[in-house]
Each structure stands twice: as structure tokens, then as C-alpha cells.
Amino acid sequence: MTTAMRKAGYGLSIALIGAATLLPYLAGFPGAYLEMILTLLLLGWLAGARPPIEVGAESWCLIAAVALLAAVFAINGTIAYTANFLMLILVVPLTAALRTQAAPGNVNLVARLALVGVAIPAAVASFQVAVEGRGRAAGWGSDEIWSAVGATVLGWLALMGRFGATGLWRHLYLLGPVLGTLVVLLSGSRGPMLAIPLMFGVAFAMMPGHRLGLVVSALAVLALFVFWPDKSRMISIATIGKEIAAGVPLSDGSSDVRKLLLDAGWAAFKLSPWTGYGWSHFAEATSTWTGIENWVDRPDAFHLHSDPLNFAV
Image 1 (spheres, helix red, strand yellow):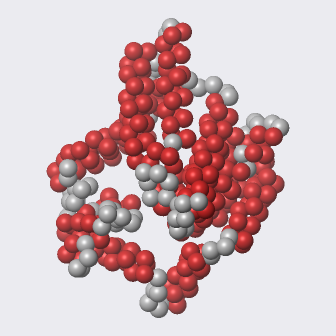
Image 2 (cartoon, one colour):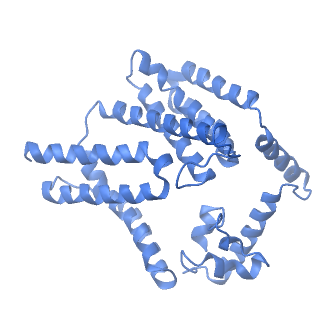
Image 3 (cartoon, helix red, strand yellow):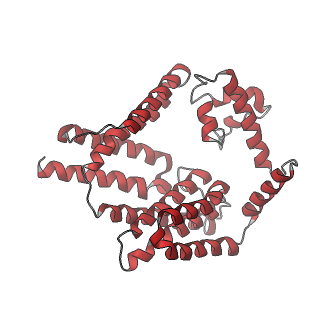
């Protein structure tokens, strides 16, 4: 492999990883297509460089799963949606392309990109709530839930920089979960709120030599929750939990909607359990059971609020 080819592969790899870590909150859905374009460019480089490609059992399982999705989407769905999911197959050669750029310092590079990638959402979300006056931060080109999930993932990804880091950076990586939590609170997204204590549990299990630092990060996160001025979303989680445990009707309106969607999705699934209805046909599939208001026709809700349910239908 020539020096020019190697530099081109490295440049494309950095561009892809940079887009994946720095742009989710700023670019939203369009950013995903940018990453697809960068992936195709990197695979074009791979075809020219021709490094060895290893395809293990997990790769074949992924390829088979995506092939099945493509088949059922083609039967009942819109063919354009199939193209989105076919991109998942490319993770096999993409892994091989990125492996050619492997180097000991890369983990620190990715961790620093992830830390910057969660600091950007923290600044944007703060601006949206404090300056623009939004009730809930939602990023750009995304929504409250998905943007909060993306920021959470980046915040925890930054922690891997603790391995082998020295000096100030070793401590700065602990800000990842804290900044991710800040975005979650500004978004008011309750799902990621529930995930935060579980994530700390996983971190304690996987990072035995860094537990003191994790305690400091956890205390900072706890302080955010304790002193957060608007605790309505936290209170609603506790209320829903108490009502479920007591077996009484849920008072939270969003819970009623989710129950409605769960029942409608399950009913639709039972009528077509093998090929479903296609990725673009949620409305038609569930309208019989969702009643007068067709939930998935609303501009702010074009899914069933559950990824397993989305795929089942």
C-alpha cells in the first residue's frame, strides 16, 4: 500500500469518526446521510487498497439479519427505506477498513472526539432552553428523545479515554457522563434518565481501577438531579412506578398513549407476524386500534415509541 493510499484511508477514517462523534446533535437526520456517504467513500478506498477482510460468525449473523429485513421491507414497504437498512451490512467491510488504521493512540483520539461531541450538545441544549426559551431541548434535525440518547452515548464513550491517560485529560474524561446527564435533563427525556444509574453500574464493573473517579462523576450527576429546578419529569417517573406497583390506572397521559400504541402494535403484529407491514406503513397497520386520532400521522410522532415494536410491525 502506497503512502498516499494510507494517508487517504486515514483521512477518510478520521472524517467518518469525527462526523459520528461531533455532528449527531448538530446535524440530526441529515448527518446520518453524511456518514453514509463517508462510509461509501471509505469502502471505495478499501476496494483499491485491498487489505485482508475477516468475516466471523457475528458478521454472518448481521448480514443474515439485514437480508431478512430487506426482504420483508421490499415485500410490504417502500423500497427507499430498504436502502437505509442495507447500509448496516457495510459494517463488515467498514470494520476491516477501520482496522487498517489501528494504532495505540487511537483510543485517546476517539475519546477526545466523544468528549467534545458531548460538550457541543450540552452548550446547544443550554442555549435552546436558556436563550430560546424552549421547554425541552431537542438538538437540530432531531427530537428530544433521540438527541438525548445520542448525547448520553457520547458521554459514556468518552470514559474509555481514562485507560492510559495521564495528567489533566485523565480527569476531564469524567465529565462525559456529567455533560450527557445535563443534556438529558435539558431534554426532559425520561428513558435516558432511567439508564443513567445502570450505566454507572456497568462502568463500575468494567473499570475496576477507576472507581474513585467514577464516584466523583456519579456525585456530580447526583447533584445535577438534586438541584435541578424542574423536577416534573423525575417526579412523573416515580409516580408511574408507584402506580404500576399499586395496580391502579396511570395518571400520566404519555403512559396512556404508550399503552395504546403497545396494544395496537401487538394486535397488528399478530395479524402479520412474519412479513409485517413495511417500515412506512405504521399508520395503516395500527389505525384500526388507535382510534379516532391516528397517532403516527401526527407530525411529531411517526413511530410507535418502541424500537422492538417498530420492527415487529
